[in-house]
Length: 593
Image (cartoon, rainbow, N blue to C red; front, side, top):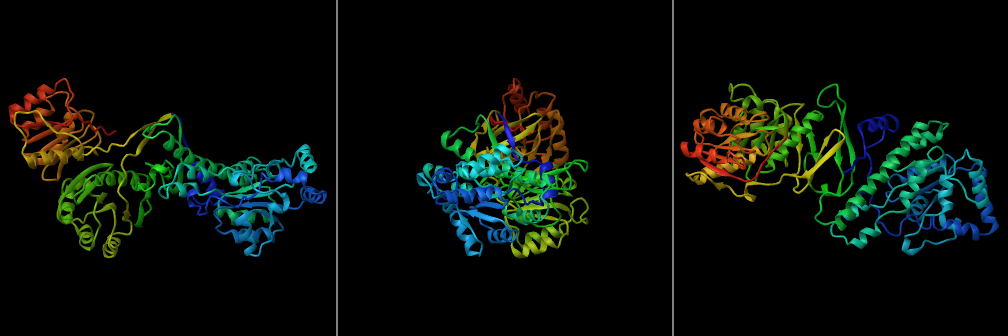
């Protein structure tokens, strides 16, 4: 299934160097109504009009194409900085051809405008569907100035050339994400003439400058003041134009797929529209360059997550910061009761839920205080003054003296006082705000030469059945511990083992090639507190006797939760029965690679 990523750090770096461009502007930033737009009669009107117009009109157009008079075509939905652009172009001696609302806005700003209908004498057709698709527009855009037969064709048909085209698109993204919209209304919001003009100008960028982003207006005017020989500038504008259209089309395609294939998650091909949010100091390691992009797919609208975070304070985010913050936020967002999660290298090393969030914080850090130092701490509650003070002043449980240091604090919100206090903890502490991550998302992961796509793992203990297989049935509190441990294990790298009690992670073993070693690590961290606690495994135990299950029983565990499905499940049951340990099977595996 082809997956087309629409941007790259390399392209972004070149653009920043050449255009000092802002992040890619997408259609959703355009606030203009889609119908009865500026491109009134701009294209469909021209060829027939030229042929039917008086000889004087034809002669005037021919003069435009051969006399060296400079022309600009402007048709905008988003009119930000339009007056600045129009006055700047007029000051440089350019004649402006425009349409509808754009022409009216330019005139209101004191800019002289030739309206398209004054040239074409031809109205728009078919309720505005046919406006700009015409040789008199596209001939003036696409004609190569170094080809005599192109120029002769323009002269024969009385078509003037355009040196600059400034166009952006109907706000399709805004329209289809604004609430309930009918399929018919969505169809009428799809821009046809705009993308066609943009692509035409971008293709002929050697002769025609194409601008789709108001942030590039200053650079355009500066370029027009010079000798205009910098082809790299033209190419970067053309790249940005094609990107603008590609991004727009990706949203239309995504919307169409969902309208036409309800319930089907995996289309034969699809495009992911990405927008550069920031270039990063480096990647996982200093020798790797990196950047961060936000996903502008329709599916991500209102979905929350770290990709849409707000940073209130601290050092700029790094590549690893994003990964760790995402892991912490995804984990803490799973819990309904007040919870604190501490993460190191994408693994939760401390998790605790309490009605008193201060106690939850202390217990989460205590779960592995050594790993927590320099980690990421996440909360699913608003951080107020009391919690902020506790975060700022809390001393490491290892010595009772060292003030805890964190790279990141992330929460759904902060009181003014809480934010003020946290800012005083450290100049570098990254204080992040995020919305709870959405469910039912498509999860993508890159491999060499391809991408893996899967449904997000949204299962929680409430959605599955914990079936008792041992002779001893678990007590209510033991089953609650098993469910808590199981939910924590979901976020630990495989092979994952979590030991928990009283809604608190006591120890975990992660990322080991064999499950028995993960069990040993988890018990080593939990210590004596493991007696009577719950142990959860992300996958089944392949062996029981003289292996992980028996070791867990011998260490005094009270209940074991695992998916089951091994040929040796009966051995695990018999082993638990021998030691009087409860065994529950979930029927659900939680591998995390």
